[in-house]
Amino acid sequence: MVVIGAARMLPLADFGLFSVALGIGALVAILPSWGLDTVLVQRGARDPSTLPGLLGTLLALRFLVGSLMVAVLAAGAVVAGTPVA
Image 1: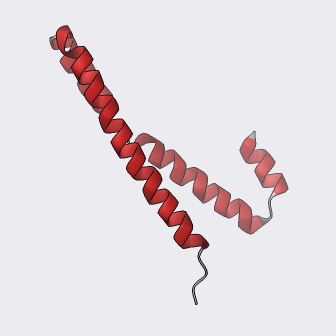
Image 2: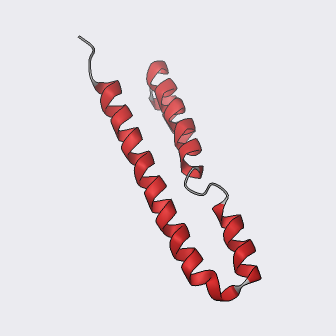
């Protein structure tokens, strides 16, 4: 729905930027998981007593990777918005 609305409302060049941003956002959204959920399930099934520690580690890693991705994307947006002299 949002994409259809954007396609109707935005000029062609702006819709292209929106489409690229949407694609990059979808790719970046999966980076923090890196398949670690599968590792959590495997190790947690082997020894359920380790689940709290594993979950804490997983959440800390996701926060770290997510924070780095936000910083990189924000820096890229600043650089892209800065006019070249």
